[in-house]
Image (cartoon, rainbow, N blue to C red; front, top):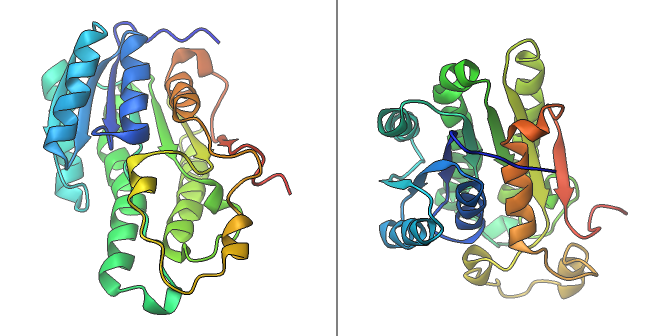
Length: 251
């Protein structure tokens, strides 16, 4: 799979670290110019520096994507900075590990806002630019979209909905020159995962059911798939959600 993003522009959310940073680097190393979006300004600056070392041009855009105006602003910034937009990579997200009965309203609403509403608002704003460029959307879902994962009710709900959104939009825009796909990774060694606080009283046997016999997924493997799906090499992928989970959802 030869990936060539030379002359292309990509917008990557969650680019301050973890999978978002890895995806931005994969795109940049393949020749893309990248708008880096996150609420973490320091992390974005680090990613920008890494892209510069790789010979790639990038621009930082600090934003809290929990509102539609912020999402509109991110897309506008990409077009203003680079003149067009070829790929939208919705990587940013949040996860709260919690007993369902103890999850707060704030945690629930934040999860929906960042994991589901933000991708939709970004896609809505980006559609005319992506269609004009015959470009692509890549959404990051999760293995939690396909199997029940205890203590992750809000996260799993949003990721399952994101899979539905990806496929629904793929059908709606079947006759338009745009590709809309997703990836669904299993657990990865990312800062988001490392920062998870394990609630008291959980059943470890239930957690083992979605932890994966083969261990954690390599972040760079997922980033490479995002870069591929965002490229012209993935011309026959539309409405696909690629599981990269080491077999967690196999059975």
